[in-house]
Image 1: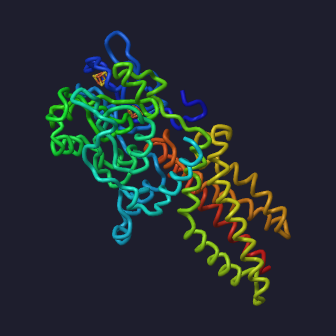
Image 2 (image 1 turned 60 degrees about the horizontal axis):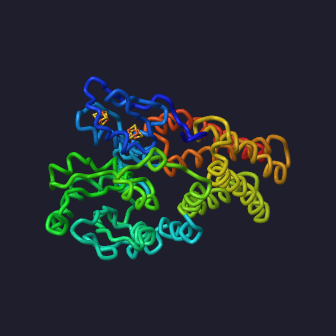
Length: 99
Length: 318
Ligand code: SF4
Ligand code: SF4
């Protein structure tokens, strides 16, 4: 869908079809239309478009979805790394980001 | 977005007058809503609120504004200030159950990473329905009985938006650029400049021009041409674009071949670094992807820069 805008193919998104009750919540919240509905259950259409925002997992009432969610932002990740170093911990906070 | 909006967004994103861009949380009436009117939940970022009012002009809705500290919906949800608990608290505080007779509220789709619709029902008795990504689609969504097609639900990233966020990066980096200028002049004093102030200035400014070229390549060119530059990794796109654009300062400023190569390497390294930082402004990069990209390319960037600086300095001592 986002032609030319793909980053990685192996997002940490994990979908357990056995648990899915077909409510469709994940279809509604996903900003990249990763899921579609088929035969009363969600179907993972394209995992490569997942940006690990976590919206689907948070909104799945059946606990069928898991994802290591976070922001794909180099600055935030860098700050999180730097915050692990003892002395620098005072300057950098793990969730520092554009505010 | 129309042009004035882009500018306003830029101003707001730059953080100019941040406090005047917050509005008080609570329930607002748009038009003359009654007990059957839809309730639209939004953040307290003034720009979002203004767009809502403009796009929904002539309609009668309730607007429930939650406290996100003047931050937009997407970032507030990601940073967990736009949460189920926050929405539930505002619902209760505003006595929404006495204001409307129905029990559903419309949430911005992009609040999804922070708000859980089914949890909301448990917390405050109102069930959340996720609306479309863009406010302009909201009336169509409501008129269609709260139904959104895939096109209303998908995030896009057009050129205008890519460039608007690039301006923010530019402004954010102004201090960094000042430090780089000082570092370049200092290095020039130690190396190529010798003891002549004129030489120090020309060598230092030459080095700074190289950094600036890399910076502009990473901040503007890569985002503008994003889908057209090969490679998935932003850092890789930056390396390539920086090496090509680096030919310009190398051709104009370098006296010798090693110096030219040093300039190309430095330009490539900086373009890569800034292109990598642009990941935070895009609506499609993931934590895993950026994490991996950084582990892979930061050593390359550091290595290139180190070699470039050494070549530049050593060549002047020879
Ligand atoms: S984590 Fe976000 S992008 Fe990935 S599938 Fe879930 S909702 Fe879609
Ligand atoms: S939200 Fe969960 S239960 Fe509902 S359709 Fe998606 S995976 Fe299935």
